[in-house]
Image (tube, rainbow, N blue to C red; front, side, top):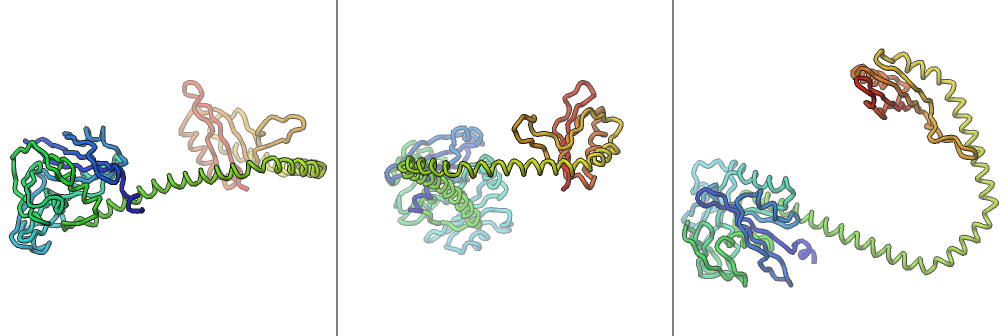
Length: 394
């Protein structure tokens, strides 16, 4: 079940190749229908920018780099990976290259590409939030088709690949144009889509038929996508579960609404006198507290205003000061609500620098917790009106 969740209904394989110096992107889209993969579309693009206009961001994308940036060689014998790379490309600084190796029965195929080139391509996709799940070099990803095709030769966009049983025996450059299609496991595939199909199959099967020095990178790309997919699926399932639980709870409790309402009404009648007394008591206490707060605060009003007045520069003119201003107008029989431990200062400033220095000086005062600019710059010409909110440190 988990494995099914980790595979989306659509997957894209993209081959980067070229013809007469022009970049070509061969794109194959496969989708699942009744547990089978079917072709959704096959297209060509001349750049990533043109591809972005039609590429869905939620789908996984497998890249095949198969252009002039790739160097490929065949080495006689089934050599170990590192030895095959050294024999194919002597004096190669491996740290600067991505290398991929395919071991055949009698030969070893090696493809390399500079890291910075591939990293830049992957970075372009990731910047636009596309999901890269892996990549391969040259024609080596075609090894994923072993088992689907036997004892035959397939033409790709750049090469001719010979299969014998469960292995590839030859990969040769070929400019031959084959206009027909290949029947690969029931899919009608053109030469331009052979490698994209192999890349998609590597994602679905999870098989590694080549060795490379970028296995960790492709594993991380795949894991990142799976984590994102698990999160998206989990989020949807979680929201659906919450909705169902809420719906069940609503239906369950709605059956008892009448009884609960009746019991609640009876309880309210019994508590009427008690609630009235508690409300009056609370109102008296709040008014007493308000009077106490005013009394305590008023003893420091002059000192606060004097401290503020000592810092005012010549470029600032005060028009209004409110100490513990009211949050709303006073009305009969309504609670008086104030902004406790706050001072509102309004005025005008003719010099921005002096105004900012004044704000900074206010913030240095030990009794001030914070100075917030509520408004600035609504005046005319060079005179700016301002409003400050000063929070007093408790």
